[in-house]
Structure formats: C-alpha cells, structure tokens
Length: 463
Ligand code: ADP
Ligand code: MG
Image 1 (cartoon, rainbow, N blue to C red):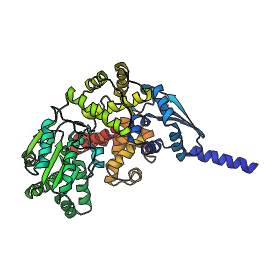
Image 2: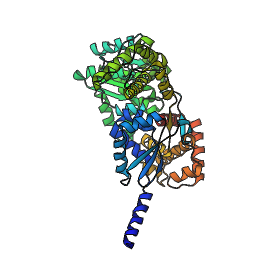
Image 3: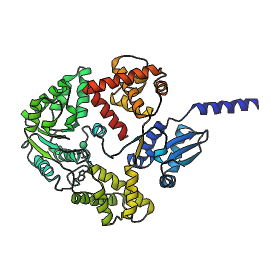
Image 4: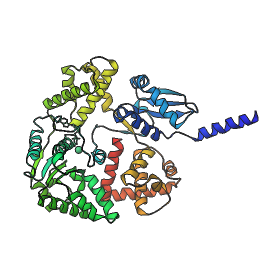
C-alpha cells in the first residue's frame, strides 16, 4: 500500500515537471496537418493551462472552436499525447484576440514580410506548381511575362533579364516558370540572393572558395531571386560580380528578380548596378481588378479539381474579394483560401456580408511572439545550434545572436528583464539590460545589424 502511494506520488511529480513545450507541440501540428491547415487554424491555438490529464487551450472565436473540434480534435489529442501520455481530454476556452495573453504583436498588413523563408526552401529546387500555364496574364505583368517567355525561346538574347516588382506580385513565380521551361536542355541554377550569401560565407569559413565558384559557374542558366539582399558586404559583391561576368562571357543566361530597379539597389557598387541594368529590365505592377478576378477564378478552378469539390462563390462575392484585397496577389490568394475554408464549413454560398466578417477577422489577425520562438528563429537565422546560443560561451559568433535574441525578447514580448534572463540559461537581468543597450546602439550605427534585425523581425511575424 505504502509502495503504491509513493509510486503514484512519483508519477505525479514527474508529470508535473514535464510541462509541455507548446512551441514543439505547434511544430508537430504543422508537420502533421501541413502548413495550410496549420496557418489557417492551428497556429491560433494557445496553451492556457496544463493539468495532469487535460489541457485548456484558447481559440479566438466560437467559430474557430467549433471548426477545430469538429475536424481536428482527435488528431490534436493524439499529437499532444505524444508529448504527454497522461493527457486524455482537451478543453477550449474562447479568448478574444485583443484580450489574449499580453505577448501579442499586432500585424496591420497581411504581407509586410519578405521572401527569405521561402527562398531558403526553394534553393535550387524548382517548384513545379509555379509554371507558365498557371501564371495569369494581365496589364500589370504582360511585358514581364512576354519577355520571360522570349528568354526561353532565345537564350541569352536579353541578358540579364531583370524582373522587378513589389512583394507578392509574381516574381518568384515567373523566375520559376523560366527555370522549369529551360531545365530540360540546360543546367539551371535557381537560388535566392540570401542563399547565395549563405553559401558564400560558409565557403569562406570552410576555406572552400574554389568549389563555391565552380558550383555556380557551371550553370548555363543562372536565376537569382531577390537580389536586393546581396547589397552590403563588398567581398560578396565582388564574388557575385565575378560569377556574373564569367557567366555572361560564356553565354549563360542570367535572370534576376528584385523589389526595386537596379539603379536603386542600396549599397551596391555602381559597376554592378550598371551591369545589372545592362540587359533588359521589366516591371511587374500591382494587379488591376480584372487580373485579380481572373486569378481568383483560376484558383477556384484549381481547388475544385484538386479536391474534387464544388466551390460556389457568386460573381459578386469574387468581385468583392478582388476589390478588398489592395496589396498583392499573395494576399489575394490568402484571402480566397480563408473564404473557401469558411464556405466549406457552412456548406453554402457565402454572402458579401459574411465575407466582410471573415475579412475583418483576417485583417485583425494577431500573432503570438514568445521568447522560445525568438530564440529558435535567431539561432536558425545565424545557423548556430540553440544550445550554443544559450550556453555560457562568450565568443562573438554566439554572443551577438544571443544579445539580439534578448533584445528582441524585450522589444517584442511583455516579459520582464529578469524573466528574459531566466529564459537565457538563468542569466542575470543586468546581462539582458546590457544586451538590449548594445544591440540598440549597434542597430542605429551599423547597417548590417539593422538589416539583420529587420529580417529577423520579418521572420518572426511571418511564422
Ligand atoms: P514575389 O516573388 O513577387 O513576392 P510570388 O511569385 O511569390 O511573388 O507570388 C505570390 C503568389 O501569387 C504566388 O502564389 C504566385 O503563384 C501567385 N501569383 C502571382 N502572380 C500571379 C499570376 N499572374 N497568376 C497566378 N498566380 C500568381
Ligand atoms: Mg519572391
């Protein structure tokens, strides 16, 4: 008898100690459900309270709760049980987003975020879904589209082809389409400028420049996405310039995208700018309403054939979505996906009013930024293991990212300085103060630091 009590007691203690790491659970949701479902629904779930055998989770609206309960609850329970076996029940609490925990950052636009994350994943891997067949032509992109096709017919006639336009307007899609088209007969290299930089720096560290150069110079079609990120670092620009020149000299086709005109690239050497502008520069503009409607209709068709289901959105609803989405195509598609999801659950045609409500929800989205999330993203960004970043080691390649993470934790969460210190392997709050001051000063003085901070913030908001 006595034995049993002790055993139970032990069991209880060990379970108590094993608090869930919600970020890990969320990651597992993402892997199990896919990013589409995750971004639309599961990301919004927060952990309110953890008991030995059940969890209280929060969701932003009643509708969210019903949807999640009706479609995903069993799987959610199975997943959390993998982290904590004793759980057998989940309760949901509705917490309106503006009243949720204080660790909230408001996002007023859907898409202020750059492509960094995507481009890392896309590195040299062409996405078969981004091709010419499903790129819809409109006034804003017809010139860019027609020259992209011409490049495929007559390689190195327009060299380089430089596609410029704002975020979410279809640059990556077009570059990808060119890559797909040319791949059968060519050695196509498709890389983001971010990734190019990453490899460059890695090969310097590993003393492996020869391979780096060979690797890039052997391509006959070299596609580089988001070249605005190559600015800064002189040595990198030199390398880029050499690669660029030797490729052009041997008749390789170069295709470049950027969010701005070559002459407007920041901190890029003049000779590189004029070389970039020396081929053909084409713009993609913000889509007009006709193009938006065409894209929506095509997307609806795609969803219908992919999921073998009927999606009934009236023309005036489509018109409404097109006129509401002001910024770019990515946002437009995001909105459509949400609306389709809602119309599925209601199983009926949505009215304009219902769409208005959904859009209100979308535009009022909030994102939870936690210290964990910041630590993960910062360590990934600098490509160092999280354990090293949190360790006591003081070498600069670890200390700077650590300080940046502390700085962002102070700026982007409501955690107090001592709380932040504790999350960083029990450091003292004075260490956090020092970090915050240092990074604040550096980010005012040093462009590189400023850029790092901006990009990490974008990544955090994008998650
Ligand atoms: P960018 O690289 O300019 O930021 P993307 O190429 O990533 O933009 O485009 C954002 C999203 O919009 C992608 O899903 C892309 O397929 C889609 N898209 C953009 N323009 C078009 C178009 N004209 N037709 C079909 N889809 C488009
Ligand atoms: Mg892009």
